Structure formats: structure tokens, C-alpha cells
Image 1 (tube, each protein chain N blue to C red):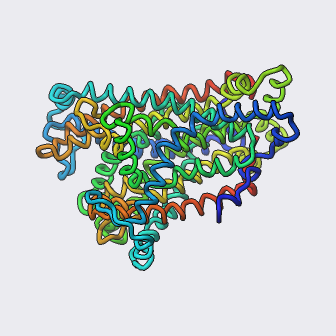
Image 2: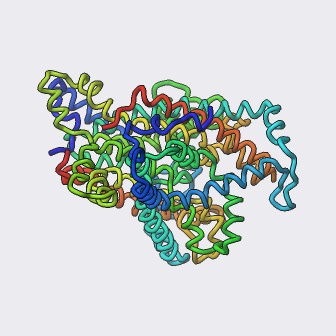
Image 3: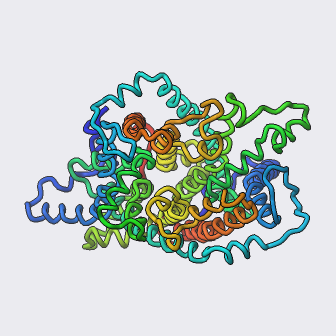
Length: 314
Length: 281
């Protein structure tokens, strides 16, 4: 699917085209206003993201070990990656991560945001505590979770033992390594989703809820008929961002398993990192990045086109 | 007050409230426990990570914190991180809100494509951009400068997207009323839009600050001099220096989390205030 197929009208809520049928001078003025609002972000994004992206696209057509000058090889890197069965594996590992992570973090974050948006005593304290993992660096979080999930001495398996359950090998076991990463990631990001959804809940007009209540709508009815539709822009944001970040999952994998055991948690960006900084294959790493980019772009475009069916703006 | 969406649920009785409290408290303990463990390790001299630590250290001491600041330029490192985070946050609030206004309120042909390109900047992993970015900033002579560390953080597609969703929720009737009063786009942006998206601005403040405060890879690559070092880079350097002294590593972690947490608590108050004060909701 190409970018060109996504028209302005699909992205934005319907708006009149203010540029139509205007005298030339006022159209020029309008263009200047648009530029004044757009350039502060367009200049840095172009200079420090888009230009390096184009450079990376060029690097993907070369063989380069970062030391000797790059050698142009055309699409060899892409062909090599497509022929390698390992490529499908690392994409599957990444999708496995997303499928496990996203439902936990979204429904958990929503429940938490709803709970902490009530007149709960001490909710300010709770909001702070639930946000703690978000601000803690992955270096520390990974250490803690490796220790909690230690197969022999970790608290989790010790606690399971009290109930006579023989706990799994967690990050040391190929079958349980990815679930371990998913648990730690969901634990860390729950507060992130909570904060975004809380800001969305705060923006909901209480009068609408009062009106629904007067009409006799119960809690669940208000949730599904008023709150969730009005929250849909925030929900859309959380899902788009979580998928973009999920496909690029790296820090927690690097810090918890390094892609192991036996490659069971080797995800796309871990592979990109290994190719660049361990194997000196910058060309192949760039090609893999562009393949990842194509997948993420496709997934995001589908969501943006699909949002018209369920996202309502104020 | 105007800060609740789902309170006063008549169907939920006392039992429901008790369950709610129990769930929220148990969850909070699970969230807090690892941080508690970090604090305990930081006050346990010669702490080891291979043994199961006891929750009450035999000989608690704040020595690790003293050594953190005495043996290293840790204060300077914190000021570096603070300065970079403050500048990044202020600039991102400006560039994100102006761009969000365009993508919500100023239609033009091809705007959807421009927005898609903006979003696309989030979709390529940083790990692959680092090398080209380094080469580019070297050409500009900005390696090992604060400016070189800052420039790539000045605009964020995440922030623009976040604020665009918020601006879209501001009723258009408010713009139209202001237009009738003779306000132009700059006045509408400043007097109508910004006051109405305060919760989102407070949220972005937290995330922009946190992104800068915790960023590791780019500062590691671009800031070479020890006196320009930032917190995460210094913390990573503590590990593996000699044999890792975990009490010092954990003391550094505690010190690095506290300013972020303070900012978050402050911003959260603002989220609620923002809605209450706007008078429009």
C-alpha cells in the first residue's frame, strides 16, 4: 500500500478546504501561516531523521564493515536476507512478543486508568507508584526481573513451590524466555498506557456522563456508550504507538536474554544491532531495517485507514 | 469536581469498592517491589546479586551515595542530563504543538502525506540511524558538543501525534467563535488551543523529559568528553568497572529516578488542574 493512497481527508476529521476559492493574496498569506506552524518541526525532522534514513537506504545497497569504504552491491543484501530462513524466525519472534504484550498492556492500562480516575483515596500516590517502572531504566528493570524469575532461587518459583507447582525455567528456557520478556515489558509499560488514557479520560466532559446517568445508563453501559467512544482518539494513539514500538523491541531483549537462549528471543532489532556492532555487516543491517520499516509502515497505514470505522473526534 | 469520568457508580456497592482497593493495592506492591529492592541494595555495603538478598540489610549504610558523589563528578553529570532534558522538553513542546495545530486545523493538499512521513520517522530503528547521524554531525563539527546531542531531539513524531489527537478533541466551535471576534491563527493557537490541551501538554512534558533523561545510545556516541557525560551513560559505566559494585550502581539508579518521579507527580497535578481551570469543559 502506498502513502499516496492515504488522502488528507482520511487522516483528519472532515474540514472545509480553506484554500479553495480565495483571492490569491489571502492564499499566499494562508500558505505562509501553514509554513510558520510547520517549519519548526519539519526542519529538525528532515535534517536529523529523514536525511539519515536516506543515508541508511544507500548503505543497505552496499557491503560495509564501518571501517573500509562501502562497496556497492545492489540488492544483494535484501536477496540474502529473503533467502535466509532465519529472517522469518526473527520476524516471528517479534510478532510473538507483540501478540503477547499488547493485550496485557492495553487492557491492564485501561482498567488502571479507570480505577485511578475515581475518587479512590490515595489515588495520587497510586498514580505515582504505577508510574515508577516507566521512569526506571531497562538496565535496572532487567536485573530485577532476571532475579525475580531466576529458575532456582527467584521469588516467583519459590512462591509457586509453596503451592506445589514446579516453576518453569523462565529466561533460561527457550520456551519460556519470550513470556518472561513479555511479563517484564508489560509490567514496565503499564504506567505509560495508564497515563495516556488518564489524560484522555480527564478530557471527557462530565456533563455527558451525568446526562447518561439521568437517562438510566448503568456503569457498563456508560463505559461502552460514552467513555470508550470518547476515549477512542487516545486508544488509537496507544495502539499505533505500541505497535510501532513493539516491532522495534530491543532494550529489554538485549538486557534480559541478549536474544537467547538458543536464539529463542532473537528479535529484528537485536539482529540489526548484532549485524552492525558485532559482525560488522552494516549493509545487511540497513537492509533488514528497511524491511522492518516496510512492515511497520504497512501495519500503521492499515490502522490509519481503519480508524474511520471506530475513532470519533470531539 | 470535573476530574472524574466514571465515579459515583451506584451499581458498585461497598463490596465492589473493597475489591477495587485490594486489586489496586496488590498491584501497587508488585509495581513498587523492584524499586524497594533497588533501595535496599543501595544501602547494603558490598551487596551481591547472586545471593537472594534479605529485605532487612545487616549493616545499612548510605556510604554508596557518598562515594557516588565524591569519587565521580556525579553532580556535574546530573546537571548535564538536567540541562539537556530541560532544553529538549521546551523545544519539543513548541515544535509539537505548532505541528499539531497544522495537522488538526490547517488543511492543505498533501497534508495527509506529510503526516504519514512524520509518523514514518518513528518506524526505523535508531540503531541503524546512529552511524549516518554521527557522520552528518561530524561534518557539521558538532561532535562532543551539547548542541550535537540536542539537535536530533528537537522534533518528535511521538509528541506531534500525541498533541494532534488532543487538538482534534477541542471543539471547532471555539475556533469559530474566536474567528468571529477577529482572532487570527496565532491568537487561536495561543488563546484557544493551548489552554484546552493542557493535560496532553503535561503528558508530553513528562515523556519528552523522560526520553532525554533516559536516552543512552545517542549521548554515548556523540558526547565523548567525560565532563559532558550524561546519567545513563555514567550508570552503565559503573557496571563492570572493576568488579561491579552493586550498591553504587543501585544508588545511582535511585538518584536518577527521583527527579523524574518528582516531575511526574508535579505534572499529574497539572493534568487535573488544566481541565478544572479551562472553564470550557
